[in-house]
Image 1 (cartoon, rainbow, N blue to C red):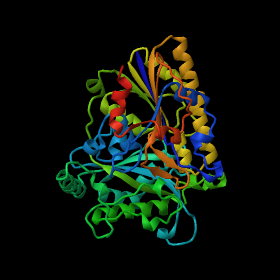
Image 2 (cartoon, rainbow, N blue to C red):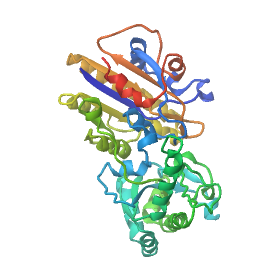
Image 3 (cartoon, rainbow, N blue to C red):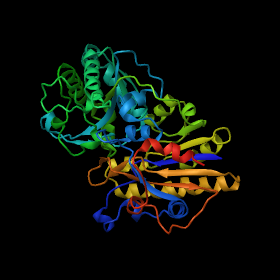
Image 4 (cartoon, rainbow, N blue to C red):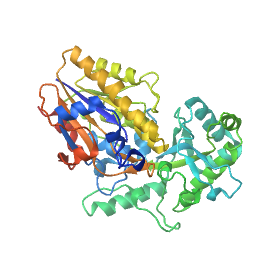
Length: 440
């Protein structure tokens, strides 16, 4: 028996007026997903624990059986684990996005965030920009003073590491002690500071505040926040006139004219997947977050040539890699980032296309190859969280899933969408999904 998990990141959504009140999953043409829903177990699952931030970090940890309430310290350490970036005691990792902000001749804090990914900037350009920035004398002096170094990510996603940030460590320790008294561990960054004089550092995800003014979301919470804000402001001064951004504007592209720190956290240890479930496995994803979680739980990390994490990616290569992985492993995961990225970009047409390609370019050939090989399998297909076109941000609502067993078929008459799923089998805790998949 082989086990497969397919995650269409951010596929789930709310009804959209432009789609006649349907969700993208209801509107899209997805015959293979609908066939699976008709022949398998359809339901919904809550992947985001109450009180936790809605995102792929907490959702995918839950899916792999790692309770975020116990193990989550922040998103950036999970991404750092993808490439083995070392975090020593007292170190803090941050996601450092390349973002696009308005070019208007107005105060910096009044400029709006146009793109959380600088228009999905290509990795070579992004790496050049971030390295030039950290080598620029004025910026370098400020970064050295703050104890921050950069690790280029070959996309808009970079990782910054701050050495011996005692302030952050104390915040985490104090917050953990507070929430332990009520029987759970909550990440310190969730203690939002309404007052900028608070000692608690508050950083916000840029993809949740597209079209909003920078000043409302700059770092808050004491001396360290001030240091991070200074670096953000200095980055805009340098990057806005960089030759690469001049060229991007001439090409009609958004400039990568600012950096943004968020997703802070300290080093993390997660339970070993094989020890917990007795299954060997792999993860196939272009996204550092998924690769990092995979590394931390002991899954084989498979990188596919041409896999981008965007709409145009190597779907077929991921399927081939999954089939090959199953020759030696019990379990594999195919993660597709495109629906989420398209939603953050406000690209409804792209989201629909991404969902349809998950169906036609991932699931259809995957099932065909499994059937050709006469493989008995259990397949779980799901969205990790909701990503909403009307906000371009994440949502913590339950998401649809379908569990299909090649040996057992039934006729539910249901298609795969949020409305149908919410009336079927509900799993209240996402950490139970793997156990459900591995049940015989």
